[in-house]
Length: 456
Image 1: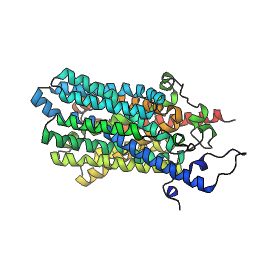
Image 2: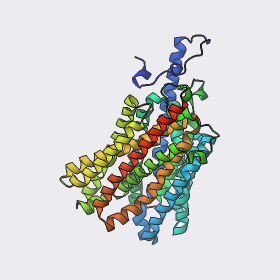
Image 3: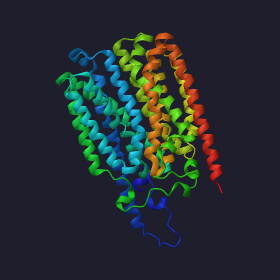
Image 4: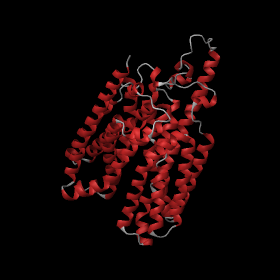
């Protein structure tokens, strides 16, 4: 069996049917094209996976050095919190701008610009010694960091067909879990051995190096190497996404039109809820485990890991299931998965204190059912709705709306946990998953209606 078949890769010319009058293509050329496509697919996957993982190296270091900034420079706790708020606001706004820019100049230029700019801001932060220069550097860094998701999702879109996209993007989205863990470990090592400034200088050099590598090696689409497109235009594909059938998006489709599109508003609203819950758990889990379940500091730290480990398995598994059973209607899988997430959060709050094992298993179930739909919405669904010309903008709109939820997560957790208790917070999260699921149900109904209207 050819190598590409074992990987679920279909030869490009088999995906783009030949015109009736075109001469038959010799099998040797088909094999050569398939091998060339496989090499480009592996290159695009590796470069973009590494790129987005590396973005975290100039994002997570501020969280690691906060206590040292307080002790050595006198930066107050309130000012440290302002760093996070300014970054998240700039990051959310930048998602929309990066989506537009990525569709205009292409992912290779966008990502090189974003990574080099983020590296420069990290160097600026590392040489500063007072609040205002640091605040400005980290806020501008948020804008440059916002190029990462729209740019990399767009770079992946042309290389994988709809039949592969769920599982490929499920594996690909492990980049932000792996990147976050590696970035935290590196910053901690540099802080302990060389001081807090090194925790910015060394990651900045690494990010700049990856950005330059991407600029030199990333190929934006198979046609750039003389190969046929991986798939035909959405309107020509049987069983393709109904949103693309009803209204194909072009390079000229304005951002305001996308931002007010009912389908994207429904998807973005659901992702708002998902990212609010995800960031709340990422930032507060060790604190919650310590305060609510009264675990030791080390137990609380280790018990927060199953959330992201379960999330990695969830992204891959749900992506594979969407390819296998729900390829033309992925929301039919994502919507009930969110109801399952609500049940897992409720069970975790009720039964999480039974034992360490029960806590870890339930927390991994929460991660599994959260990161799976998260990867679908921000990855495969964004690519299929946006298509070749608007993937970056669609990903920017959906992820931008989700990033607004991330902005509110610290305020929500602090306010609700202090006034009503941790149980009320988690029951509230379970209730929000019902809202998110209903939004996806509405989006699915809209897709079906658009498909019916587009049918001859």
